[in-house]
Length: 371
Image (cartoon, rainbow, N blue to C red; front, top):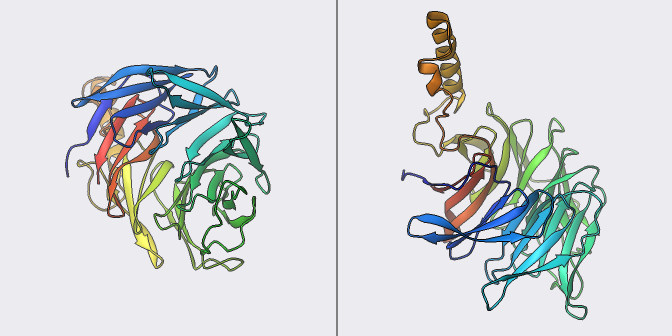
């Protein structure tokens, strides 16, 4: 396994990050600004800053084809930033019409719309109105009962998955007349007017759902929750019970972000500071290990190290009467990230499989992993 590419950008949390399609530009959400880094050789150098929000930025996404950047923040606003010929970025305010913080934003695959989750129990689906020359939003409200933590688009750019702190992962239709073409019938349904609930799945312990993701084909949905579980749902058709709902419980700290690397493999990361693989299909799923080279095979990844470091610390305190010696090394984690991971994103893909991913964390690092 090749060594991960580590970019320690600063000593501050990264709430979200996004790479441009050619991977030469990295947008990082740092406090109330977006920092744009440009790749020079093997490192990233700060090139520009996007200022406009006055509270913590919670989401950033670069559209792969147009290069437009969308950002959202706890100030209840979203901006679409467009590159201008003089090299500057021109911001356009989006009319979100929400009265609580925005929690995350993602462009749909065809880049005609983006979705913003919020603490107002609303998902704002935003699209551009040509005649008025502005970005407007339509609200998905029912049956969301709490903060929307994450949004994920289906490959057809109409279906939208969302995770929430009410313990549910849901699939909605975000069909906007005049913007979207009517989608092909799928396992999620055929007739899909706006706000149709195509699926609603409760976490087994009703724990907060941290992230949701559609499989590359769009025929399966995965979500991770605060009870350290990952659930994969295989629907069978409109108004039909799902073909399979498989929940994998782990002995790790909860995952905050997950993505599909192929139809049979997931990659998840979160509070455990490591990046883990899960694999399976409709017959079952399992945690198969970590992307870190120094993890022990088999058993419960990560747990042995924590037990060992705690043992060393108490042994040092007992022998020397202080938590020094070997214990000082224990303040440095054995993982690449030195704090929890906020987001995992696709970095490079081909032939229907993701070959490399990137993760951003509270330690101010962005790491590129080879799968």
